[in-house]
Length: 139
Length: 134
Image 1 (spheres, each protein chain N blue to C red):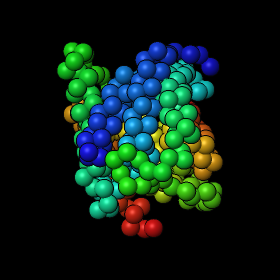
Image 2: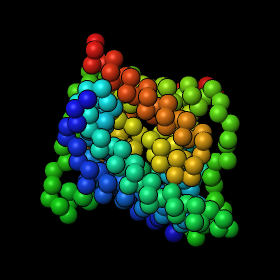
Image 3: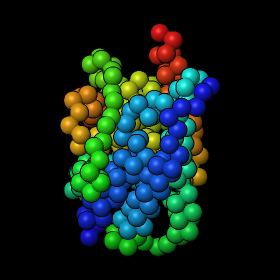
Image 4: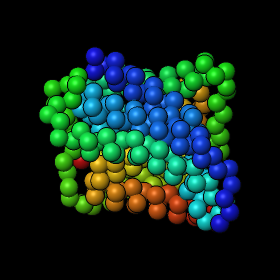
């Protein structure tokens, strides 16, 4: 194992902001932040639909506001073929809906309140994610 | 007021994903590449998020009601069922293939990246299929 590209300060700073957002959503609106839940409920359920939509719009505004104030261009790199993009997207949608959470819902909100369900979900998707990358590297 | 809070929390969360670079799937795949060239950054994002949210959850967990809503709506599910494990396995596989999970995927719509848009549409199809088969 070699460590590369490690950016601890920006990771921690961004993480603190995410934690702050999660706390505000809890204490002000009484809800646990889970993006898969917010997005899938926006699609499926009439409950809180406007709230959920506004949260999703906020997410999309985030990078735009950041770029506007810092003049920095945000670069991302996705190299998957169309087949894997669609397959990966469907798997993420199915999996988070079936297990009731994702990296935010289980990984932050659930782990943060010491929910055993969420701790087990987080360990499971981390291990499977690591194995998927390992297999992908070998093939 | 709760609507304004939702928008504001989304914005802060989105900016957090940008600053932490978790919006970039290459960073996430670097974290999942534990047995290769490993980028531990994602662990620091989770630590950052948890050191703020976790103590505050516990401090306010006995509060009667939230400030702008009539009650807390928090899952009290406890059982470790096969849906939890099966769903987490599917999610982990999709996450490991592309490096996108729901938050960064939706946030990256702002960058008008065709690949992430295809991923997001597919993810919503996944939500829909799961909701119809339950």
